[in-house]
Image 1 (cartoon, helix red, strand yellow):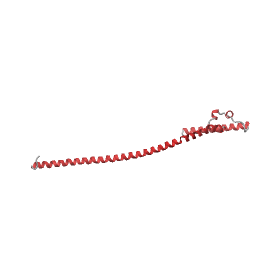
Image 2: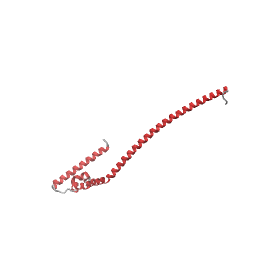
Image 3: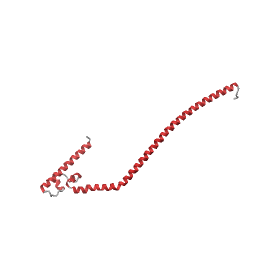
Image 4: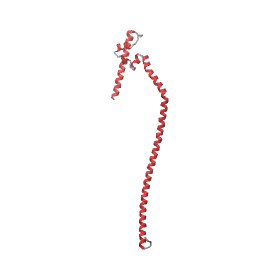
Length: 162
């Protein structure tokens, strides 16, 4: 088990302990003062031994003061929804632009691969032409040598002047 997982488990345990202490304090207040007694942070602090800061955390506040919890935390959700609605069109436009650019990138990569293959083909052809040219040069040298030999023979027999 990783360190973070154990830390999460410890925090969850502490939350559960806090919730249990708050519920016990509320039950004690109702038992001592009646079901209609006002549940305040001060009373819960006195009966549970928790600090005020602990009482105002989201998980604890939801238990002993749901009205305050909804004012604090449901507003955040509403604001997030407003922002999401406000920027939804921008997000949609940006996603479309990303898709367009990705498609363009794929087309460009495809063209680049095609050009790279054509380049390889041209290199192969060039190499073949180079080999053919060398072969032709060699053949040309042989023919020139043969011509020279024949010319020398003709000159030697006196048939052709130099």
